Image (tube, rainbow over all chains, first blue to last red; front, side, top):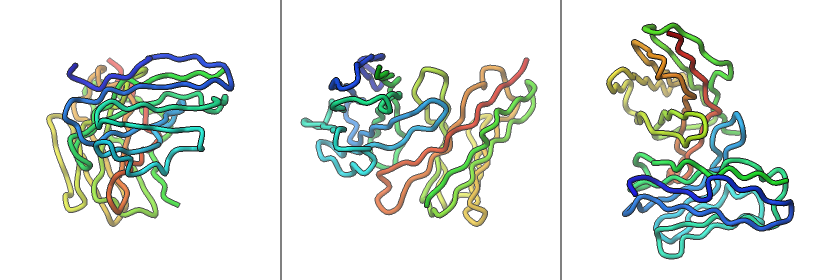
Length: 113
Length: 113
C-alpha cells in the first residue's frame, strides 16, 4: 500500500492479557517511530528504529512494553500483562530518514478492560 | 523540564478569516519545528517543517513563523474554510540526534461557514 498500515484498528484486551500491535511502514523508509496518544493529548514518543536497530527506547513506560523490527520493515509493539492505564491510541510513523517528513498510520486503539 | 504549550482552548473562527495558532516551548533548543493536522480517528498528517535558521515558511494558504528568541512558533491559515476544522499539533525535535519528536497537546480549530 501507499501509506503506513497498522493492525488491528481496534483491540480490546482484558487486564493482564498480552497484546501485539503491528505496523507496516512505507516501503524503503529507514526510520520508524511508535507513539502513544491519550485522549485529548498529543502523541508521546515511545521508541525509534533505524532499519532494524532500536536506537531510542527511552519513551517506553515500563518493561512490559517491547518493540521489534527484525528485518528493518514491519514492526511489532508488544505489551505484556496489560493494565488499564495502557488504554490509548498507539501510532506508528515512518520516514525516509531521521529528519524528514514522517507519515503516520491511523493508529490502533487499545482498550484494556 | 522540556515543555511545549499550545492553546488548550478551541479556536472558533468565521470562514474566510485568518486562523492563528500558537506554539510556545521552554528549556529547549530545537533544530526544527513541525506542524501537523489531525482529524478525529486518524493519525497526524504532516503540513510544514521550519528550521531554526528560517524565520518564515509558506505553503499555499499556510504560513509558519519560528522565533527562537521568543521560543515561539505561529501557524496561520489564511482564507480559512470549514474543511480546515481539525486539531493542529506543533512538534519539535530533540537534540542531539533528533530521534525523538516531542508533540504539543494540539489546538482544536473550528471554522464556521
